[in-house]
Length: 496
Image (cartoon, rainbow, N blue to C red):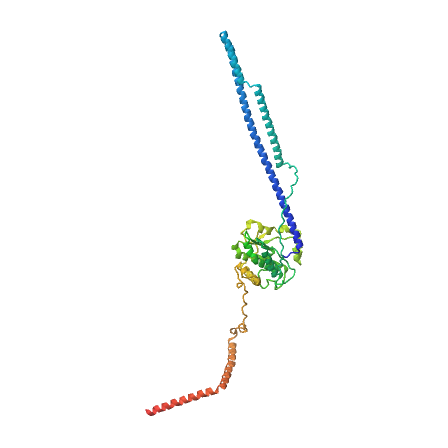
């Protein structure tokens, strides 16, 4: 589409690429930090679970040790009681007593050997308890470390880490193609170049436009606002419909229009291209109205193909577009300067129509400020829509063929302009004689009949003069026949 300069366009694209890179990098950093925090939380939870497990094992071990110690104390108490009972019994004979004493001592020693742990056993038990305490301390230290890490992840500032090298973000793949909406020939050249590129087409945004300060006629003989803002977009769309249908997905067409369409004159074929006088705001408003009206008709023709068509009002934007204004319109735009949207915000409604999935399959739809809105009642007048549709196709008939028209259910024959009705002849347009007074009509009729009779007599005289021999011969023949009949009658009387 026509832009002020390719250099400015490239700078704008570079800025968009840089903003895209920064946004992607910030998103990746946030994702990485979130993943790191989640990892720390998981490690802390695992450490806590391990600590609880070790504490449970240590508790069970202590219970077993306490139970064993208690059993040993009970065994010792029983041995003491048994020894005391043995000392109180009287000796029964010297040898028996001696034998009994030796036996008791032996049994007591055996019992003591069974019930009382040796020095080596005590040392082993103490070492085991020391290992258990050491393991418990290590677990507690690990838990404290995990708590510190978890606290840092949850609230405290994390330790500074060296920034990792950022991944290289591939640049946007852009291609520039020349398109001048002021020329149907340029539209055809662009279509050919785009088709030859082999690129897919999922979204077509018709964003080109102007406000002409004076009446300008294009090389195609059309008013510039009408052709650039509306008709060339329509021609471009017709040629690209097959690509939109073939590319798959959810194909969309977005016409960037304006809320000023509500102040348009409407579809008046006698002034549709400012034939009766030019007003820059009226011409602009009309062209934007025609975009919306075309949206409704075209959508009804391609609805089954799954193509959604939108018209969007981007809002008042601080850009160079207002340079086309003049007079009071320019004063009004300068008044709004500084209060309008920037270019990024101005593109938001267009991007909403393209990217917001809630509007898939909802076309035809008019959007303003990133949400559906109601266009003017005039734009929804079906009779006027049909008039504009036919008029537009008649103007484009030399730039389309039956293949292109088949996409919208039309043919070259169906869009041929209608032949004008024949003008009335002078006789048909003359005043009706019935409106005149009767006497005057009769007198005029007699006056007309008199020259007609005279004319017929003159024609008869001319014919008689041209054929005297024939009439004389006929008269002679009649005379002879009469005489013959008279003679025959006399003969019959004589015979009687």
